[in-house]
Image (cartoon, rainbow, N blue to C red):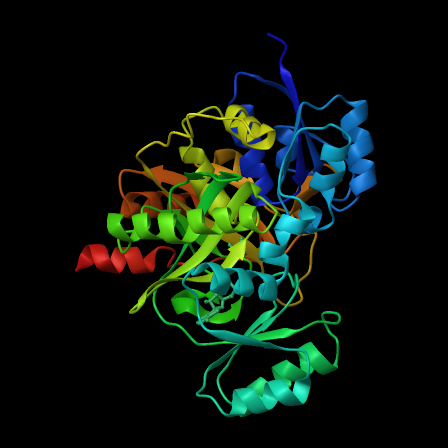
Length: 422
Ligand code: AMP
Ligand code: GLY
């Protein structure tokens, strides 16, 4: 059998996990990753192309006769990388730019949910500052304000009072910090959040294990929102009935809705969900694998990753992925200061002795030494018979990593562990 050549687009922890999963496939020969990072470079050949350099990526894939391309970041999808590859006859796992609007436009997503009866917070959208402000001031606080467009996870403000709301709306609608756009104002919901990712090919939807991310920077869910500081699988607060409801009424319904709208999905649909007292509701949809959820979910994939990605990309029938019955937990090590300003270039040592999986999120090699090169730097992932076992293992291994400029949360999976104690 001719081994397959694959290209993974992106260069974070999520892409490291995708590269590792593809590397376990007996069908895969060569793996390229653009742009990759220092950890990915140990498992794939890194190519210095930006994830949004659509033309450069397409030319590279044609030249290297890449059999399958897998896209990590939403920016690449929103830039039309999947459209361009398909137009050139290349097989690619990832949605068209039109389908990516389910993530890139909050208004598109909210409208879709309303139209197809997918449970989510009630909302209104505004492009005028005064109109938005008077609407918000007439409602109870906290107010949830979402910038309508890709804002790298920084487009959501939960304003506690009128002053915070005024400042956020000014930022989003008057100062143009994110570009010209609209703001969605929605009801404030409460309850535990979880991430439900599915492989989607048109109307075919294949669920992945549920995961929970930890978005705030510090212990006890304090501090600013980040891209995610840790994640785990095996959520005790989501029943089988909850999962079934979310699968049918949210993920499958959204996949059908996108077909009806003429922009079928082909890749990953990520439901950022909340279990509220009024039932499970959508906080957001993403059109891609979650980061850091992917780093804890893909290690559980028992099926051949190439086969699954390839079938979804080709629109072919598949038996669907099989998953192992274990629990995984991962903790992110981030640069001090993240998600605000931080410095790079600090040496990292001790990784060779870590007996857990280490996904590189933002690393580079300078003068032969591994150094920090991003806000989120590493994620240490372990598997266990239960969450407490996986947690103990991860924190024990992190203690062996030496880098003066990293910090991490000490309480990943606290909601699940509190439940287990009671
Ligand atoms: P998003 O980028 O849409 O996932 O929002 C970031 C975070 O803001 C979410 O993970 C939630 O914790 C919070 N959030 C977003 N929308 C709401 C809402 N309607 N009610 C309460 N919290 C929300
Ligand atoms: N972990 C949240 C995200 O990937 O958007």
